[in-house]
Image 1 (tube, helix red, strand yellow):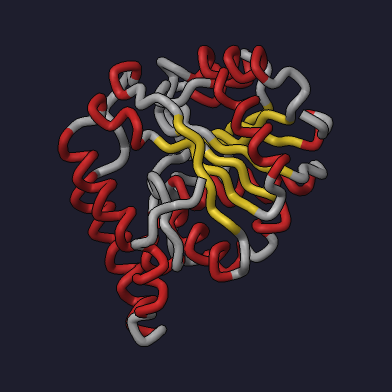
Image 2 (spheres, helix red, strand yellow):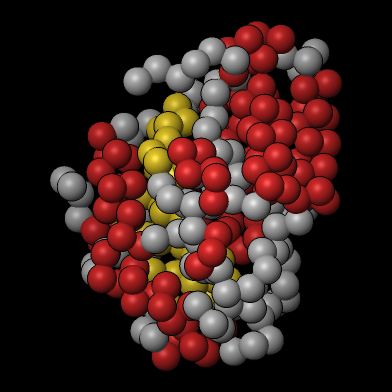
Length: 249
């Protein structure tokens, strides 16, 4: 790792995560002790924000619950205002391991014009069947619009170069929930950034509550967002062709 951890910010959107947030923060501090850690409390009513502050994290509190996409954008803007050159994201429900953050950073620093995704594809047997099917559908559509194969487009465990986050205003008023994470991959790929992946375990059994992700409703919203773009782009057949190519190793 050849960059100071102080140039790295970790953004964790959190909604009703009182059961896990303190453990998540402790894990992040152990794995990345000098990185900037920002918890975005998206209108929780169970004390998530207070627990995070007691655990030593800086907590951002938007005025109301606005969805994961808006929470991520708020955190990303705050991270870049702190001078971060890399913004890492992870979920607060126990699904992601903080110990995988240094590996994510190492790959990111080696490929500075790429977004790195922690992909759960190699461990999909541990995922609920409905989630597996939904993720496959999303991966197909998001990869098509991005014009490249994307492994696990719905994973929130990511590393973004700050230069890929300079146009967050384009998402205001839309892409508030989970569709934001799909839209930003599509736009980054079209802006010339690569999308790479590392394998991470799928820890669905570690989650302390039912996921906020709704496979049918949220994937439908994502597909409609992508389909609208594809229609505007004349269906982008070359993107479909590129997305079906096996990834290079």
